[in-house]
Length: 356
Image (cartoon, rainbow, N blue to C red):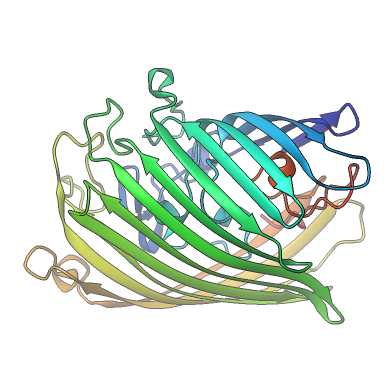
């Protein structure tokens, strides 16, 4: 990740390289995960995950009120933060309902006191592989807007709307999507550690109201100096598409309407981590373990039977590893310029601990 600024913070470059295309080229088994040709696996994101240039101007020296313009490859102003900078390693099922990322996007943002308004245009097509780039000819065929309220310190509430043209077909001949999202987020230091919580609801309609998917997610975490605990619950609907010869893949780009039905995934996840080393400046080593348990239910039984595909309709998984952070801290991915709520002063840019 790179984060550089000049002109007293008025011009900023934010970027992140993502090597999942090398380390998990076939995806990672994950309950309910889908998207970009992967089914039941969390797919690798593109090597250039984010590369945004932002210019901002405050209206006065004493306030955070101002305007900004951002352009590059990044996040459309829609939904919640990228799961990559949230407390869990495993991705939620609602990832493709609650975020719009890796697009060529232009975003205008305005802030007036506790109110932030954003609007953006971008290309509708999703990447089909780690080395894929947005279709330049499609820039501007989709748009989104987000309104954020900051009622008290550490709390933000957002509502978003988007119209996305043919995300599943690069040529633009696929089904269009209409998307809604709302969420409330809390983050504040306490006497025993850093407390975080979020609850969100998302809905995506595809092909008008022919197919509709909903997701509800709630997550919370408390991280002290050496120990951390996090919990997440979600209940999300996803499309069940015609599968390729390998049962955990679908064909991209879609040549016709290959959605067979809908399924609903209900998943509980708990995560524990322990910081073993943080004495060296900028270095943090934290082993972790995550345990997930869930159930899948077919909402269209005639076209999708989870027992026939998986052998059962209940699942559990355990994931263990070590997070190693070195150097700068992660910035919040998905907001740019004055749309970053935690900017009380011109030269301040608080970041999350680098834990992924």
